[in-house]
Image (cartoon, rainbow, N blue to C red; front, side, top):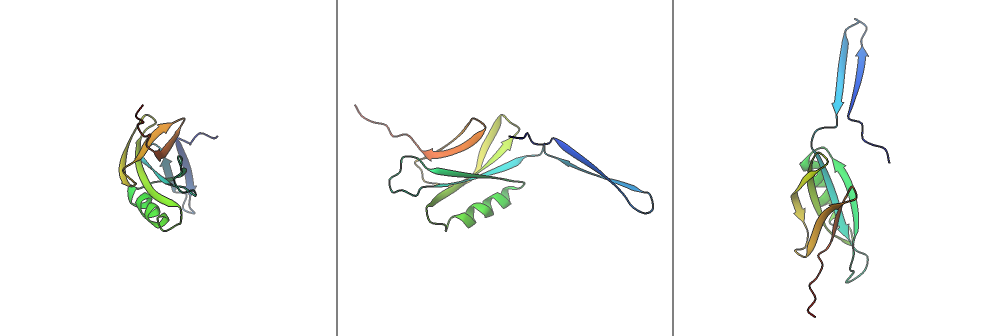
Length: 117
């Protein structure tokens, strides 16, 4: 898997020999949309689909547009602060769902149920 580019600099020159430098930096905050669901009734694990967005609004709109798809249970929008911290900023998920980050990916699954023994 390729690592994201930290910054890209492009230099453009017009006919008057003036130069313009455009710089894109990936250090800004990123939003991850996780949609999840199941194709089986009473499934113990769900599928997760993850996409990256530049704004919270675009992630929320994409999540809402996925809800009418059969088998989709909901979505979660996560705001990332670098590589070590994150917070859920919007969600539409059942109260029994759990969100966590492991092995470089976000996961949404049914929360483990307590079993009386």
